[in-house]
Length: 178
Length: 300
Image (tube, rainbow over all chains, first blue to last red; front, side):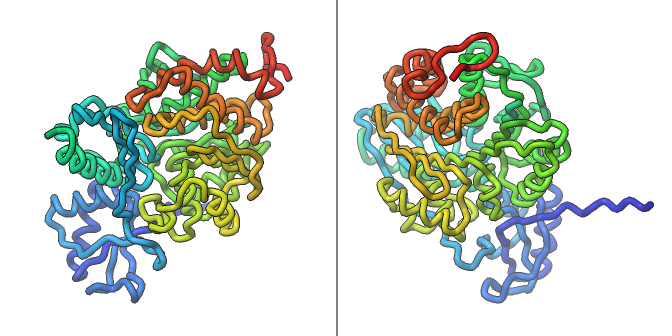
């Protein structure tokens, strides 16, 4: 009896849009070469920006994918969630004052730093695998000297942590540092 | 057997399954040393401390190194899909990973082949994937924080970074509204423990309990203090407690440990976990029917 291996299914939730088919195919090659799971698909009409070919990606991997496409100079228009009703990425942050420390929250990610020294004392929240790695890399470092999650991370959690770091830098540089 | 599954931030750690032991600030499994920090390792350590106190078998852990690129996550889920039926854990707790809807769907199918369905717990990105794939009702327990609760209530979001702004703006006191929407949209597990300034324990849409004392706001900035709640909850359920009771006790114990540790935003999660045995000794009998322990299992 012949044995057929079932092709692994893929549900990504995100789309990379391109201006032309050539860019879409080049991006597929670049991303597959880096072990990303991707699939060439036709974008829904409301998301068409140029060519009729898009790449389905795991939306959570958006930051790592965008960084790689830029590094490889592969042109793309934008990355969007596949569900039409989905909101854009959260841009707002919330700040909590703990006396000697401030906590800055961006979506599900929180970064806390000491007001006086600008040293990161904790990061919390999230659930993607780069977050505990970034936690270890960032704690104990000054906001201005800490690695950027957008450079080291790969996921939307990392992107939100970067937002929190950016806001923390603004607060610190405009506050007790001076 | 209780099985905890999640990634740890060690690039070179291969797929590893075994019993974990605590060694100072590290977990040791099959000779691999894993630092106890935010994420799966904090959850495992909390579960381990709890099972040790209750004199239960230590949790089995399935971990893989992954710093965000997803390879370890995929290996871990593939292994679990292939082996969950033969492992047949009583409690299956899924934690940090690169969320993958298709793998989660296959895992839920594979779980159906277990001789007895495990009690399914999901937190962190395993919970994100379950919700995004429309599989929340396959799970017994989710442990979201306030923002993740908004994510569960947003029918379109596949990650908390994409939740609608008005839901992110929602005050924690509005959690009951978010809970109601999440259940209405079938985006919640049977039991929710919503972690926040006030913790909510919800079963099938009904709020069974709220916990707000002791009030230790500094727990929120400390990376891993949500993971410890999930770890304790998993161990308490494994001990035979009803899920809602386990959720209440875990939430209380975490707060009390924070108080005993005199937590500040600069406290590390290991300092919180170190307080658990003292908290259990002083309060477990008062909070639950687990009042003393002989060799073997906790006694009710």
